[in-house]
Length: 155
Image (cartoon, rainbow, N blue to C red; front, top):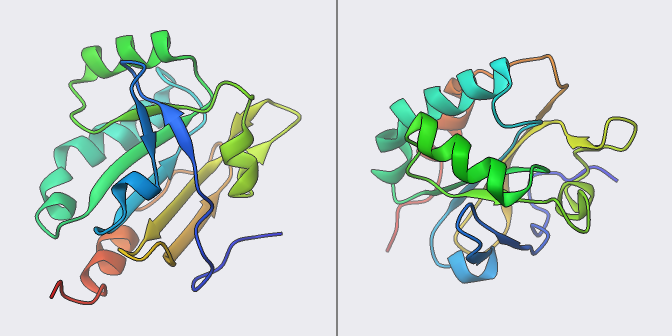
């Protein structure tokens, strides 16, 4: 079942690159951009996350928290984050393998990886934007920025 705008975002609690658990409910109160990607260090994924890194102020300036999720183990995520200078958390959906990606309906079970799914979750935990692209289909982040601009202003 695909997730749609207006659905409640599935809860997750995943370790970040430093093995600190990050949960969606713990981020509640502010919008969260959840970016699933196939693999750390792969060409398209690195390009997309570097673009996100370079434009991060477009999100954080609007009060949006950013998390990126892959099925890579925490050790790979730590090395990836350090190499690329990412300041947003990289979350590991390694075990149970792909459970969070499955909950968001962005898991490719034949390849054992997440596809390129992007979800903007509003401050109350409802999906405000969703986009799902295949593994080799890069995302245009202009749509993400438009979705952030369309969020209701914080009170």
